[in-house]
Image 1 (cartoon, rainbow, N blue to C red):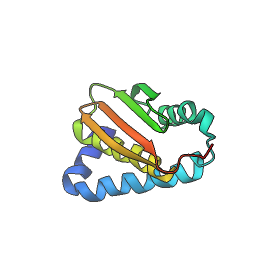
Image 2: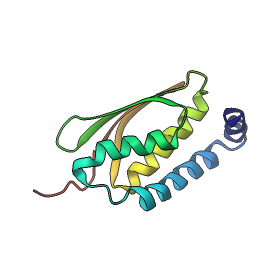
Image 3: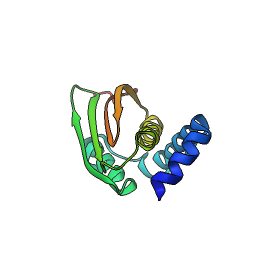
Image 4: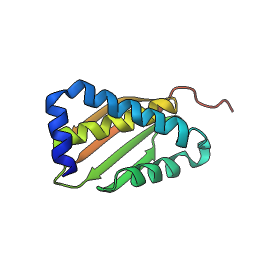
Length: 124
């Protein structure tokens, strides 16, 4: 039912729906995720995504370089492409609130792959 409702809203006003998802996730990131220590970032961010997206089958976050990460999220195969874009915007909102930026991404039905980077890495 959630997918049907999301698709109806997406078709009616795509930009508004994507922006609302982004802004709500940005708020969530500021309120619940802003205190994640760097050494536990991957684990805690992955846990937060698992809690938010109950239809997510697998989330993998790997550190690539000093401040760059790869994320792969695999959802229910029934998840429509439109809804997958909504989830992508939510992840983007959370990351942006934590001062991370998406460098590149791929969105397919029930699948998201992205590379993101910390905008203000801690000085050592």
